[in-house]
Amino acid sequence: MVTPHELRHSSAAAVRQACRRGLWRAPTAGLALGYVQANLVIVPADWAFEFLLFCQRNPQACPLLEVTEPGQTEARLTAPGSDLRTDLPAYRLWQHGECVEEVTDVSSYWREDLVAFLLGCSFTFEAALLQAGLPVRHLEQGRNVPMYRTCLQCHAAGRFHGPMVVSMRPFTPAQAIRAIQITSRYPRAHGAPVHLGDPQAIGIADLQRPDYGEPVDIHTGELPVFWACGVTPQAVLLQARPPFAITHKPGHMFLTDLRDYDLQDCFTPVIASSV
Image 1 (cartoon, rainbow, N blue to C red):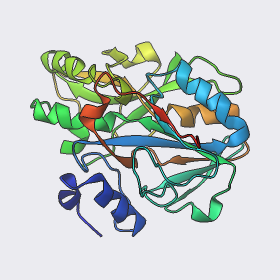
Image 2: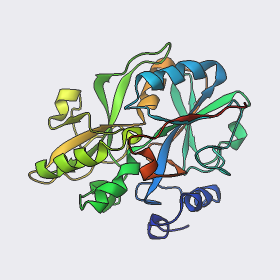
Image 3: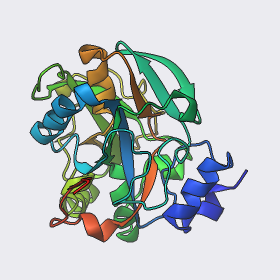
């Protein structure tokens, strides 16, 4: 196995290779700093248009980076040479809206009708937060970022509907202002927060019991700050209940060859085409 220190300043390709070779199976926060991380959602082709529409209607929770053609296993536009079946630390398999298994390789489950969606991830802007001297608590504590289902409802698209999921990072009020300024520059990595302060106002009962990830310490004088999260589709899959789907395990992301500055303001999502 490799250590976080070895991968912290590595290339995205090195992280993908470590995953492919079984050398990294943990969350990817803090790895390959400066490279864009992505959420993964894979659905059958006959569900793909509705999910694409869902992403377009909910760009803060589901910012599109790339959409593949059916059966394509390589993220050709954001990570040439990659293999979406092997290059993540861990995956979730879904059947009829239920997560039935977590695996480290989905090659044996691959089908020629599957369409992959890569969505922006808030891990991408954490390098900028660190460079500004802001604390990123889950990195400090060596934990997966805490994520919560909320009472905020996404805009429905066909069979896809459900609640927004958010990630949380605690800051003092002054730090929160700076974090908002920084993350607003990354609309394809969820952009500015959707809420700060009282978690109950968005339907979160207990910050120490996240729905995904792990809890982190919140110090005296700090506020919880919440960003839209790319795990939202996993909450939505519970409602839509497609017969089959594959996602990343929360916090275990796909590393693209895009740099974080590629996602600042003017980056445009790309959709694979055979033309």
